[in-house]
Amino acid sequence: MLPFTQNIDKLTDHLFRHEAGKMVSVLTKIFGTENLETAEDVVQQTFIDAITTWKLKGIPDNPSAWLFRVAKNKAIDIIRRNKFSVQYDFSDNERKLLTSEYSLAVTMDSFFTEELIKDDMLRMMFACCHPDISEENQITLILKILCGFSTAEIAKAFLTSEDTVSKRLYRTKEFFRQNKIKLEIPSVHELESRTGAVLNAIYLLFNEGYNSTNSNDLIRDDLIEEAMMLCKLLTENKHTQLPEVYALMALMCFHSSRSNGRLTAEGEIILLKDQDRSKWDRILIERGYEFMNIASFGKYVTSYHVEAAIACEHCTAKSFEDTNWKRILEYYEWMCKFYPSPIKELNKVVAVMQVHGAAAALQALEEIKDKKKLESFYIYHSILGEINFLLNKNKDAKENFEKAIQLTQSERERTILKEKINKIDSIQN
Amino acid sequence: MKEYLLVFRGGDGAIHSDSPEKVQAHMQKWMQWMGGLQQDGKFVGAQPLEATGKKISGTKKVVTDGPFMEGKEMVGGYLICKANTYDEAVQIANGCPILTFDDGSVEVRELKAMQM
Image (cartoon, rainbow over all chains, first blue to last red; front, side):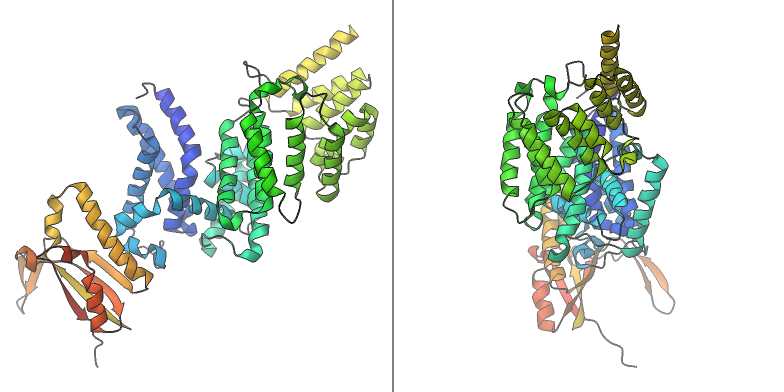
């Protein structure tokens, strides 16, 4: 038993991230997507109970099991209380046994078995990514429902306001309410496109964990873990074992293998070229290779394949100098051709800088279409500053870094940028 | 397809004094039986009944407390299912977990359409 309430808060936060998605998925299967809010309420209430009870009586031996049991009992209460309500419809075959006291409790137990929960989460992912829901609303809901994100965290991930996020959530729930979307795995002919939307959401979640916009935690291991867990669910179900699923899995393995080398003991960012590569997680890299292998058997190549290939190059290079930047540049060129986006163009610029030097990089940067869109990102100014510094345009470089400092929300990025400015100042003096 | 009412008597009363594990194992049997019916699309509804009750009788509408009968005569619950024939309904009733008790019984009655 942990004595401090602080530990309980920490534990419940962790459990919420980890278990809330499972609980909401099962409960949504029980109450229907039109009652998503009921499912969320049950989970919320369960966690409130957990905090109050655990603070009084200590943490139980198996906190997750405790949460599931309490949620289950709450669900049973709701069913009993709403026997005559039209809000809940248990007429379909799967849920009919919830209407009889003879079978209610046991049926509820059977809904909460580990294997079924995995499928429920997968179905929930697809429901969140219904084609009639806009992409940003899909992603918002996945983060909220399946990943236990708070509205504030989603707002940060999307660089938008909490108000906007709340509206998106409201609209999607309204859509569920009106259309009573079934929780199911999509049919074969739409599986690919709908899996694409799910992968996109997972990718975003992973990036939120890996390049956190949150100023306090640069690497949020639990986000990375959640993203990989969701993707793993897709690899485990025979209907969703598509090449791009494995490619994204590989990409995430390669990236996350470097988590350990990216920060100092004090939590400061270490730049790629200064990282101790022996700290990279070889097991994750191996797993990355395995997934990459499976991904390559597909009939097509997606941007995840190419991004995984780039990450793989970094992982295999023995040192920063050994990195095959030429090949990486080829990958970026390929990607910008088939999946153009300003951010990818910007990444390409970094590769251009390594292969052809700063002047060429500057030119590549100038040539980016929709450059305007990038100007609100700190990273654009940071890269421009790097280029200007290499071109000995110190005054410009300093201005770029200062602009970047203004734009980043990350305290650690700010520290690095300040160091760069200090370096310029020390050269000038 | 016709509808049948299955009336349960006796049996389950003994289970309440058993350990929670035994109760759960017994309820599992109910769920399996009803789950089978439900999968065949033959399950309509079912509920157990409290042992207490009131009885109103005759034109004077005299109210008395409780059935107060012996355990094996007491109606403990019901189930309504679909079946084509009495034989099939009896077949269904055969699987009822109440029949794991010596004093348990199931009465099978066809729901009647009123001839007006």
